[in-house]
Length: 114
Length: 114
Image 1 (cartoon, chains in turn cyan, green):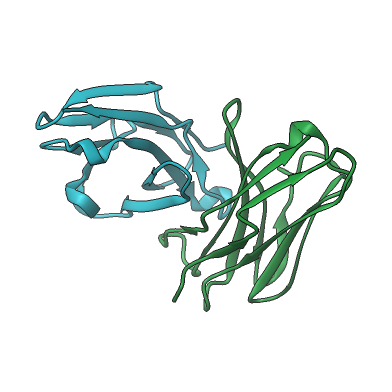
Image 2: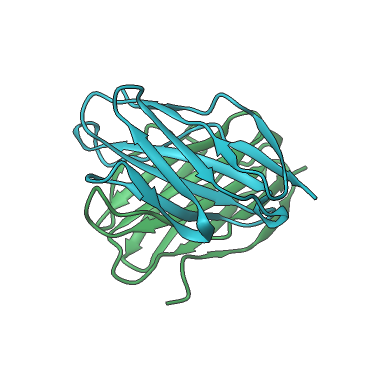
């Protein structure tokens, strides 16, 4: 079975500082990994994905994520946080050998303070 | 494309009443997913369809829940009878064929059962 863990319920960072939101996964085959962001009273918006190739993936709004196979991690990063980045972030994994379902982590609330 | 469209955005109903949530996926997408989001359980996959056929409904909590997709551009999630513990935000998402494709989410229906 596939699973995703986001070990931090909340991450606090000052505006202008780098941010990291952690994600680890467990799959039996090759993972397809995704990050989504959810603003208040909105649906989830796709940020970026890792399918294959370069381990560093760049996405929307200046976010990037690094795939680390040995550590089974896919941490979300941004060099300089903005107050407007404050939102709920979800990591998700799809293992094709386990079907077409996308399994989400529990979410991490990012709070960027001025 | 206008994205995934859900209606209504908000629904307040009394316990025991029937509730129907509606979803119009993005044109050309052949996968459709229904998720439920609560504070306690996070994002849960309820059911998904491929080419209008239900593939996995193992996430549907009870027989009170049912979902249909009569054609490629419309799906419903019905709860009958509704209970207060069904109160949640229900999301519909769709995507194209291909394990590497990302899902696009609607803005959700906030259901309150009193």
